[in-house]
Length: 253
Ligand code: UDP
Image 1 (spheres, rainbow, N blue to C red):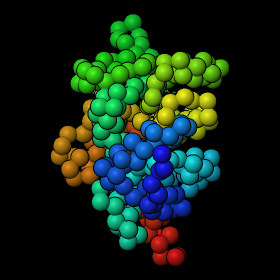
Image 2: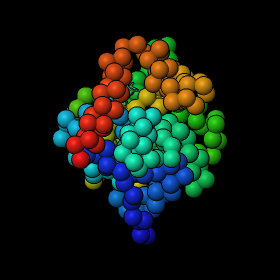
Image 3: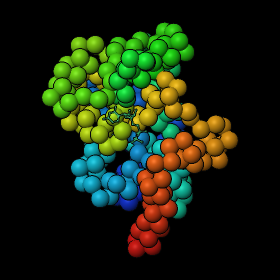
Image 4: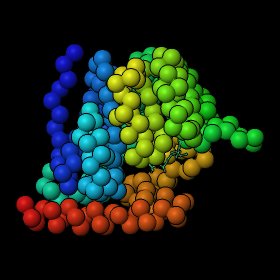
């Protein structure tokens, strides 16, 4: 089937798809109908900023088939650039829509990444899978694998994913590791599409709380995350740097 033309917006030299949730989902459904493994990335301002300095990450994002505007910083930047995005499409909200889509279309998902099990509790990906199975009883979960492995184990993980017959792959290894994994392995992967999901399995499993409605509605999810994980402050301090760079870049052009 033919893929519709993409409409993109360039932020600090990185192309982001001009999509709201509904357009992102229809693009996703097109990608699930192609032969090769498509790459979906959900960069926030911090990742875009790293991509300006990291050519490998820049190339990975440029090679992606869908680049979701994840985060309030990107929406602010789009307004500053005079090409306002309607809304931010957070990775975790997008994933929820994808799960509904997968269930409806009887396509299966594989969960790869997050912390392994301990004596006290199961691996986060398994808890996440069980919780989502309860929420979506007809969702087909083809398999799971935790994300703490030695480089020499990677080949067998790819084989396991392929052997599971999964249609769609979620990778939770943190950014940019998850995107790098998909980009390096996409030729061998038999899934139709793969996405990097950061801490989503932790949220699904309940080990990390998602920001309450108030924070989400006011674009303050980052503040809630900072309260939960104060060690992230250095990464979050990148938001004003990002905005400043967008402004400076605009005034140059
Ligand atoms: N993770 C993993 N393997 C690693 C490092 C991290 O599976 O070697 C997992 C980690 O347990 C967490 C996710 O990757 O579930 C990273 O989440 P984070 O929110 O830090 O993602 P980021 O914001 O860096 O994209």
